Length: 265
Ligand code: ARG
Image 1 (cartoon, helix red, strand yellow):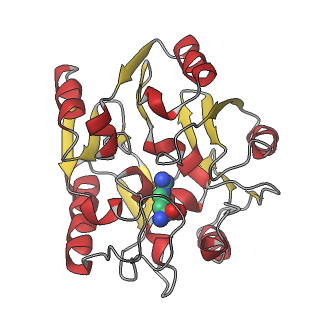
Image 2 (cartoon, rainbow, N blue to C red; image 1 turned 30 degrees about the horizontal axis):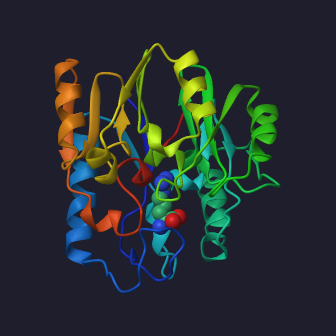
């Protein structure tokens, strides 16, 4: 299935502040390496998978804009914009809004409560899995339900290292998600098992390598080249597996999925 996505070139990507446990201003990004890794991902999407990739201009002093997953959640052409928890990222919202306006989108939600876009909201069939509390408030879930008119399942995250839902849960296909159980409360793990027929468990190593921060269309999956166990599992499932190095983005607490926003028009 072909996808349309939004990405942002890492021209100004850097670690200028610390807003999650992975970020340290002492652990600087190698800019050439970061550009190379981003281009490899872009190349897979465009040339290997034939997906349509749109670009938003990067802006100086907004180093995390490269993580477009946090820029919105788009379903049926409706756009829920982010209300970022960290003041450092708050200026991004109006830039994403402008991009969507310039590209013909007209229906917007600017949530009252904190909400960090697809980083904390992953669509599985017609169910939206929504994570809280590290970076999004549970209270935004009702705003999302009302705006999209969608079935939403709140999932409580329990390990600060996996602060966005997309760091510990992958939508694999219509029957399958992959998770790292350690990142969720008992109750939330139970909910996932009640709803999804096939739940793949990632190892600690694969999860720490950001292997769950992945993009799948059900047949093709793109993930970190260091998530060896998951790579093997997806191959055994018969999927086409594409791997990319993401070391520079991991310094910022990001990976494949964080660099990708799905535009469901
Ligand atoms: N440094 C960024 C932040 O803390 C990383 C965002 C990762 N994005 C994601 N969708 N998990 O906001």
